Length: 198
Image (cartoon, rainbow, N blue to C red; front, side, top):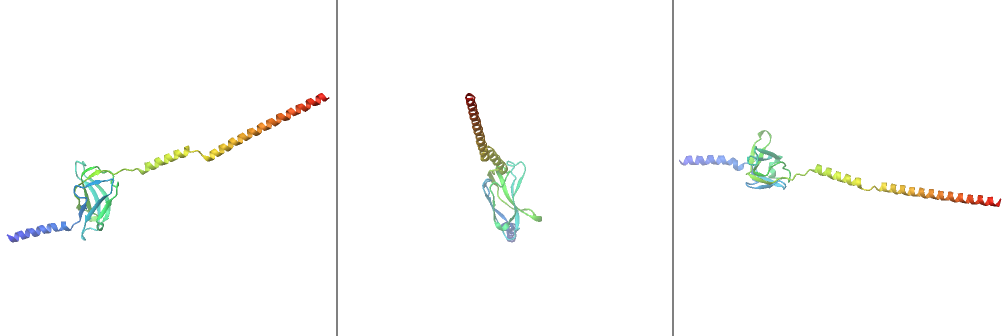
């Protein structure tokens, strides 16, 4: 009787021993909330027998959030010895807000499999989408429009010079016309005087 009880306890200890020494996700904790527009942290505890690298995968098997299972790689080939990984703000695109999310630490290579899994947590706010291409195009369009409507100093100088030249030419023509009229009048006066003298 006593021997049987000791054997059962020993078997139970052997069953739990790998779990004690295995890779364990510390964060996110059960019931935590992630705002995808802000940085989030995945942390874990490891032992020397754990694989050197693994992948961090975001999953959701909650049918109230996703009708089919959801899975998205957050980071691949993470060093186990790092003990922590910071998920950059807005780096997870396409996820829904909801409950039932978990972080899986998945082995790489031929021995692929789930090494550890976090408790279920919630995503309460989604990533902010920012299209740099459209914004850049818009800025260029605006700049181009401004450049088109901006007065051109060279054109202004050219126009000013043209107006000045035109005014000068008109003034010169007027002077020449005035001089011609004056010479004509003097010539007529001289001719008339000569007529009367004769």
